[in-house]
Amino acid sequence: MTSPKPSSGGPTGVYRAERIGAPIRYELDGTSDDLLTAGLGTAELLGAPPAFADPRHPTARELRRRAIYTNYRGLVDLRDAPGGGPAVPGVELLVSLHSSVGASTAMLQIPRDFDAANPCLIAVASSGSRGIYGALPTAGVWGLRHGCAVVHTDKGTGSGVFDVASNRGLRIDGTIGAAGDPLLSFAPDAAAVAKLAARRPNAVLFRHANSSMNVETHWGEYLLQAIDVAFELLNGEYPGRVTPFTPTNTVVIASGISNGGGAVLRAMELDSAGWIDGAVVSEPNIPVPGLRVFGYEARPLYDLVVAHLLLQPCAVLADEDQSAPFLAATTTAKPALEQWCRDLAARGEIAATTGDTAALARAARDRLLSLGILPEALRLGHANVHTSLWSAIGVSYAAAYAGMAPDELPCGVSFSATDAKGAPRVLTDEEFARMFTDSNGIAPTAGINLVMPGEGGVLRAANFGSIDLALCLRGLRARLAPGIDAVAAHPGIDARPLIVIHGRGDGLIPVNHTSRPYYAASMAAGGTDAGIRYYEIERGQHFDALLPLPGFTGHYVAMQPFLESAMDLMASRLRDSSRPLPPSQVVRSVIQAAPGADAITLKGGKLAIPP
Image 1 (cartoon, rainbow, N blue to C red):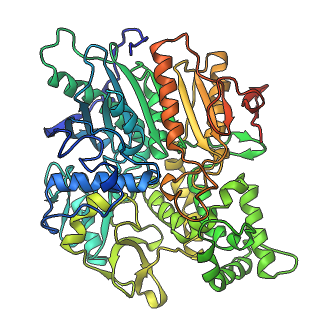
Image 2 (cartoon, helix red, strand yellow):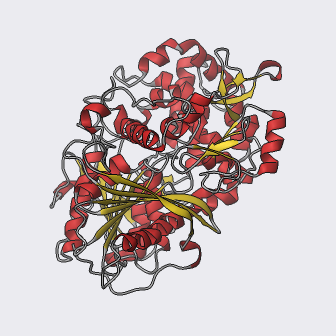
Image 3 (cartoon, rainbow, N blue to C red):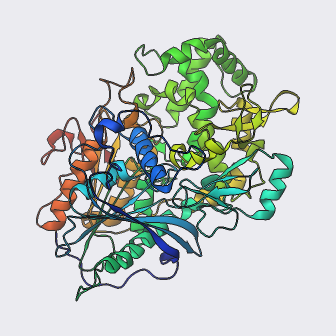
C-alpha cells in the first residue's frame, strides 16, 4: 500500500509520551510461539486454558499465552476457527508509557513478512476495559495476516489490578511487582490505598475504575501516543534505512471495537496532523449527547446503563420471545424479579392501570423503549441482567467519571474476592497471578466481585445490583456531569475515509445513541466532504463470543467478518483513492457496492435507515 497523504508534522505535547525502561522483547519463531495465537493455533484455543508450571509464579511467556487465549475466548465466535491459518512469526515489543495524561501500555508487533519497502501500520485499541491483548483477536488479526505492523494500546484501562492486602500490582508483562515498581501497569496513590486498607483490607483495585482519572477522556491521546512510539520502535528494528519510517511514508489504519472503536474515533478528532490515513470501527462506544435521531435524544452510556440496571430486571418479564437467550435464568428467578417490579412501583418508578406484575413489567419495558432502545436490543435483556452487566459498568464508570480516589466507594461498592457466603476474603497468590490473563479489567471478573453493605451493614457480594444501587448511581449524576460531558464526541469536517459498522441488535451500546447520531453529526459537519460510511448489520449484536449459546445461534451473525471486510475495503481505498467506499447501508448479508433500497441517507438533516 502507498500513502496518499501529504507530508506533515505530528501531534506534540500530550500526544507524545515517555517510555519507561527498555522495551520487553519477544522473538517469536512461528513454531513454538507466534504473534497471532502464542503458538496455540485453533485447536488449543478451543481447548482448556494453558496451564502454568508454577501456578503462584507463572513466567511472562506463560502469562502472555494464557492472556491471548482468554481474549480469543472472550471476543470471537469459537465456531469460526479462531486464530486459523498459518502462524505469524515476528517480533513483539511491550512498553510502558507515561505522560501528563497518565500511564498506558503500548505494544508493537512486527510480522516477519512486514514489507519495509511498502510499509503499513495498523493502530488498534483494546475493547472494553481489557488488557494489551484485547484487540489482537479482532482488529489485530487483519493487520498480522496482511503483513502490517500492528501497534496496540490498552488505552489506560487494561489489566492494571492492584491488591490492597499485599500492596502489590501487575507489571506490564503480567508478572507481579511490589508497590513502587516502575513497570506496574497501575500504581494507585499510596495514601489512598492505606485509607482503603483500614476500611476494606481485602479490596482489589482496577485501573479503569480506581486510577482517580477519567481515562476515557484520554483514550484518543493514548492511541496517538502508541502510534508515535510505534515509529520510534519500528525505526529501531530497521536501523540501516536511509529514510526512516514516518506517518508520511507509511499507511496508518486505526481500528477497534466497542470501547476500542470509541478510542479510534477520539484519536481521529485529535489527529490534526493526519497521522491516521483511515479508520474502521465496530460497535463503537461514542456518545453524541443531545442530538436527536428518529425522535430519540442521544444519551450518554452512563444514563442508559443506570436506566437498564433499574428497569431491566422487571422489563424482562414482559419479553414474549420464548427463544431469547438466558430466558431460563429469568424463569428461575421469576419470583425475585416480580418483587423487583412491585418495589419499582412502590417507589413510583413505574405504574400500570391494573397493578399486576405483568402490567408493571410491560411498563418497565415501555420505559426502555421510550429511551430509543430497539426491541432487537431488548431481546438480550435476560443475558444482560443475569451476567450483571449493568451493575459492573455503572459502578466502575461512576468512579471513573468522578475521578474518585481509590478509597472513595461509589454507592459503598468496592471490589474483592469473596467466600462461599459472599463475604470478602483475601485474594490468594494463585488468583492474583491469573489476574493479567483472566480479568477483563472491570468487576465482576476472574473471581473478583462487587461488594457492598447488606443487611446489618455486613459486607457481601452484590454483583446483581439492586434498586437502591441503581437509584444511588442515578443520584450521583450531577457530580459525574463534568466527566460525562468530557467524553462527548465532536465530529467535525474530515475527508479521511472512515467506516463505522454496528449491529442493530446491540444490547450494550445502542445504535440510536452512538453510531446513528455519530454518522448524522459527521455528515452534517462535513457535507459532501465527509469521508464516513455507516454499515448497520441487520442481525448483529455486541458479543461474538456468545454466538454458540442457545438463543444466539441461528438468530445473530458474527460482527468479526464484517470488520475484516471493512478493513479490506479500507485498504483498497487507501491503495487507490479512485476506488470509492460502498455507500452507507443496512447490511442484510454482505456489504453491497450498490445497496439500492438498503441505502442509508441523510437529507435535509433527516436520517433515513431502511427497516
